[in-house]
Length: 448
Image (tube, rainbow, N blue to C red; front, top):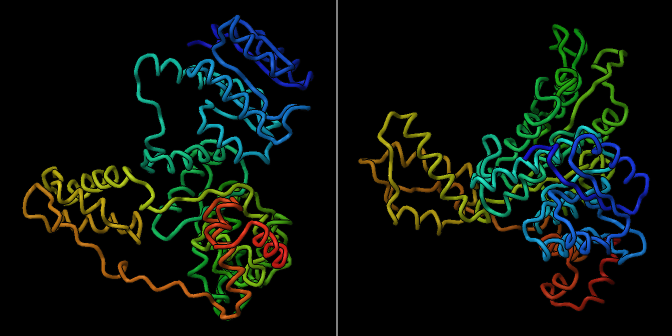
């Protein structure tokens, strides 16, 4: 559908927003209807048909839970399950907006928005509506080189699409081998900085003596082996994206140095007093869990807030269901072409073995196992016996707390259970075997 043929309903309790939206779309669409009271939405929908509804997520005087947008989205979808709704939310409510997408919203926009962005969002929804009518499969199966159809990966793709075009700092969490580096690259490739440098630094591989030299650069003679000037990674990434991998591994002293640079937005190379301004988009990744990052004896809380404007958690492969077979087919094809072999088929025993395995090494382990299977296969059918997993990954060290202090162990356990249950106190209390009141007392005791 063309934008000029669209009929749009805009619902917001801010008269200034309605006026601005009406003026923006008046010359671009067939009809614009504005409404200040959300309880009039259903009667408007009964009287008229709208191609798109733009809906605010918060209204004064209603339920006052911050979920008003979700409430009215559900009511709209009950009336018309094919309705296309774009939600408008404050920046701090991104997680709430992502929940709304799972409940049927077509998109969401973050306040304050740019006019060209909201027009583009409307056109994108209209294009998807047209694709649905033609029976075209909707996008989302693959974001660049990232494959996935599972619900958990759809959540990741949603965040990618919304966050990538911004300059927001992103913290990527996930186990080793889940593909955090692919997420970082996708964020850059879909940003306004995509034509500028993408610079990756593996902080886990830097010794304390190399940390400042690698990140901030040095001048000739700054230390014994400094035989020439060297540009640091911050300066090399200026204008583009700096990806700091394994940020959870750096010391408190290194964290303080990094925080200073991120706050001031300039670097001072070793052996120099020159302050060089840097313009970067920062992406960080770690396999360290949130409980460890929340422990100020190990990680500065002010740095966590600085690098974690938006958080993306990459799910482990064992939680991705049907994605395992999709990825297997992809890697088998890649390695069959690489090693100049005929296309392979997967026997049921091979598929069952894939389904039964827990993949402690995640996608990386799957990839290596399939490369081996393709190399060693005697014919063009892969059987269960062809799938051999690394004994390195199958040995799992038991998780032992860094301390034997009972209070520290209890605090860590509480944090892990609450994180596992996505902050649900009732469910966490049941899993811990205590009452809600007892859990709240412990939260207060440990200042959590």
